[in-house]
Image (cartoon, rainbow, N blue to C red; front, side):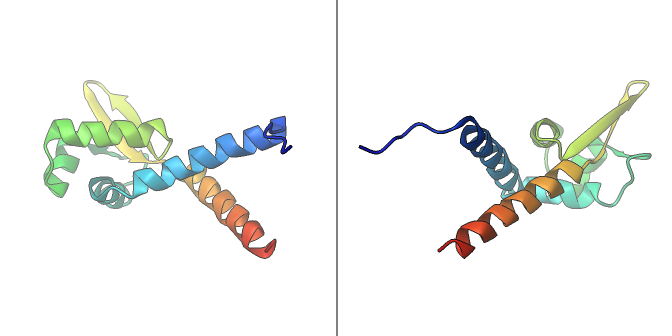
Length: 113
């Protein structure tokens, strides 16, 4: 009989793997790719407003806000409010770490065969 239970460490690794895959899913959307490229042109200090982002990538403001919300939830985008205006910027440190972890896991898997 095969033991289908996972250790705590395996469960944690699987959870992290799913989060890492979530980052890849976020990057798979063309509109979010455009947003990330636009956000890459500004610093966290300056940021860019949602209306400017929407105009630059050709989406409505609500659609742009939706994509920004998803990117913010997974830590790819940050925001700061100045008065009534919200400025968005990239926060890629966590994403880079997740992609590096995923790459390492795939390399280990390939080398174990």
